[in-house]
Structure formats: C-alpha cells, structure tokens
Length: 321
Image 1 (cartoon, one colour):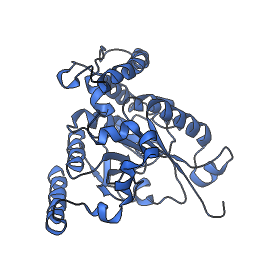
Image 2 (tube, helix red, strand yellow):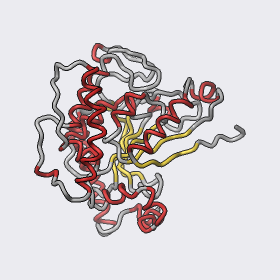
Image 3 (cartoon, helix red, strand yellow):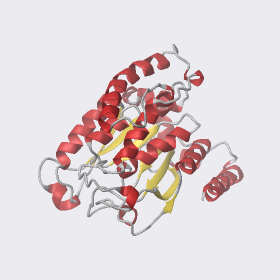
Image 4 (cartoon, one colour):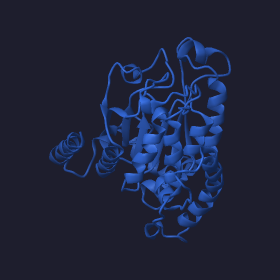
C-alpha cells in the first residue's frame, strides 16, 4: 500500500514536470486566488500562525508537542492521565510561545515521553470504550465492536490527493479522506465514504505519515484530515503525526460533532480547525443528519477551536430550508 502511494506521487510529479515545467502547479492556473490570499491582510491576521507555518517561519503544533516533555507511566489511570493533560495543555502554549520567539530550539529536544505521546496514550485508552464523538457508544473497538460510525481498530482511507477545491488559504491542500462518520446527513456529498459503501484501504500510522510527507513534498500547504469525519480516527491521527517528518500544519476538517474528550486532545495538535456549523438550536440536526444535541456540541467545539487554534467556519446552506 505504501508503494502504491509513493508511485501515485511519482506519477504526479512526472506530469507536473512534463506539462507544467516543474515550476508551476495546476492549482496556480485554476486557483489564482490561492496565490493572492498570501498577501490578503485580513486572512493573514485571522490565520497568522498558519501562514507562518506554511512559510516555515514557525513550527506546526504537532512538532512542538513532540518536543514538549511529559512524565507519565503507561500504568497510570485514565483519570491521572487526564489531570496531567489538563496541566500540560496550559503549559504547552507557554512553551510554544517561547519556541515561536526563538528562545527554544526544539530540534535539540527529544524527551523520552512527550505531550503528543500523552495524547496518544489517552486516545488509545478511549478506543477500548469509545467516546470520541457525542454519541459515546462506549464500544471496545479492539475486540471488533463498532458503534454508530462503523469504525474499527484499523484506520480505513478512501483516497488522498492534492485538493484544489478548498478555501483559497488552504489550496493546494493535502486531503486524506477516511471512511466512517459520526453523523448521517441526507445531503452528504461523500455518502459512499461516510457510510462504508466504499470500504477503503487500511494503512498503518507509519504509512500514513509517509503519505503526509509525500503530500508536503508535492507542494501541499497542509495535511487536511477529512472524511466522512476524522473524529473516529483521532487516535490514529495523533499517532500518525508522531512519525511525520516535515513541518506541515494540521487542518482538522470536521462536522463539529465531537466530544469534550476529543476537543481536549485536539488542543495543541490541530493548527487550523475547519469546522462545519450546520444547524441552529432547533431539531433540524436530528431530522436531517440524525445528530441529537448537535447545537451544544457545535457551539462548544467552535469556542474550543477559537481558544486553542485558528478557525475557519463553514456554514451549511440548504435550499428551501
């Protein structure tokens, strides 16, 4: 599977070299707004850190999280791990500020266990009693149990490619589409992916990391984690970026229907939250997307995103609704 992924990008680079001279991407021809946005003052103000990361002036959150020490034992209780995580989350942003200001060189810091390792440990425990989304099915995915989303223990990927149809500040975006979703929208544009009509292919986290690095090498500005929805695969994404080598910002492209636990794990990991704001406080979410309590989750997660990262909001427009 990894060889297949590498060959895809070798073929892409061949085409770019042959037909575009190797110096220009197709996205530059089709999406000139994605170049113009680099000089847009409003965008640069709202996504200041993201723009610095894509220009390699600052480190992505996951790179800093890998260098931020965390002292814990695999034998610690989940409650103890959460208490430590809450403490370190506050300290992480102080640590990041020092890194951003050039006071610390994270390239020389390799702790035995890191803040990212702590997130991975907590997320792995959650797989045994799954509560990544609001539904909190509490299934043990390690023994084959599956909840509403249908996701098991092995991450399933539908496709990945250089996406030129996203917001201009994201294009070209290294999108990775995973199978399964926490909602069931009647208007879903990725129904075959979200509802497992298409099964996808399983990848190890090391293989996914290589895919992310390949996307970066081909010119993608970011790693855009999408689906379906990335929420059921929170553990796998955290672990994947333990192995990613390049400095690439993480875009969490979600329906916003994830739990407090997931929101906490995303703090200090996601650089940009690309969140849907699909419905208001009425029963539309339940009728159209089978998503009870969507409003509460959506509002809370947008507030978390604004506090702990940079935020792009997508508002759903439904005809005659």
